[in-house]
Amino acid sequence: MINRSDVPPAGFVDEARVRRVKRSLVSFEGALGLAETFSLLGDATRTRILHALSVDELCVSDLAALLEVSPSAASHQLRLLRDRRLVAVRREGKRTYYRLDDEHIRTLVDMGLSHAAEDGRRGRRRR
Image (cartoon, rainbow, N blue to C red; front, side, top):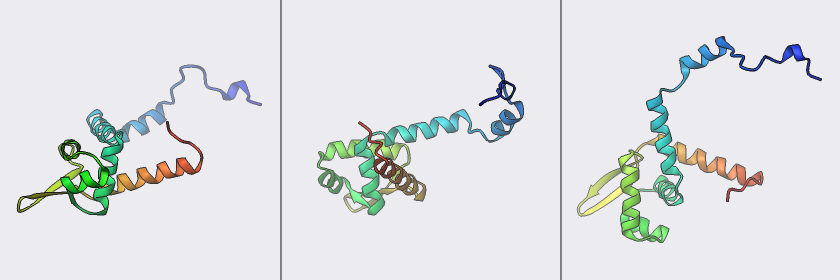
C-alpha cells in the first residue's frame, strides 16, 4: 500500500534532478536534426535503401532493380538521403555509386532493425 506521505504533491518538481538532466539535454537544434534523420527512416523504401547500402555500395539502377521500384523513385529517395548526409556519392566514369555516409548510419540502421526484430519476437507488430 502506498503511504500518502510518500507521494509528491501535484506539480512537485525535483529541482536537483531537473538541473542534472538539463546539463546533458540535447539542444533544440540537435533534437531537430535527429528528428529529421528519424523522419527519413520512417519510410520503408528509404530504410531498405540504407540497409542495402550497409551491405555494399550500389548505383541507382542496381537499387531500383533490387527494390523493384523505378530508377526515378530510387533516385528521388537517394537525393533525400544524400541531402541529410545519410548517404555519400562516388563517381566512376559515367556511373554514380551510393554508400552509407559513415559508420554511424550503419549502426543506426542495424540497431533499428534489431529493435524491430525484437518487437516482432515479443509479438508487438506494427500496422
